[in-house]
Image (tube, rainbow, N blue to C red; front, top):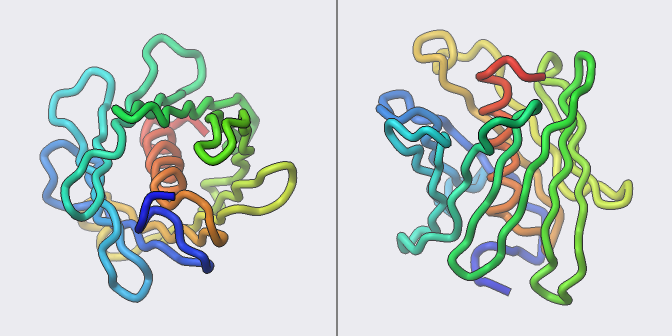
Length: 182
């Protein structure tokens, strides 16, 4: 396993959308106790709404890009190391539903995560075969949101679950919310 992307214990990430970002959807990602773990940089003037995720040494982990011409907003995560994934939006009345598909790096098994939530309630749950692996919540009506329209998310992640993948799911849900695709 990649050091720093998996932890043997539960962790909560705080993901703050940067207020003065020209590209939009640039996030500072750190643990709830203040340790920086990832960076997510939105690309200015990107047709595919690309966002690059890096570890704290600046090494690119993957690029998250919006799939064009899809009925429901969907994303591809493309890694130079071949650890690719897809976040497929699904239509649902009043709820946010997605499926995350990827191949497990440890054993090569095809994995499907379910993401269900309500951004009216400002939360989402991520499960594997009904077992929770992460929970996303967000601050509502804080000063950052009122003044700059920027969000703060909290992502609580189960032990030994890929931190960068859970952060990417949160960013994809934020992008869907920004477009009005529930």
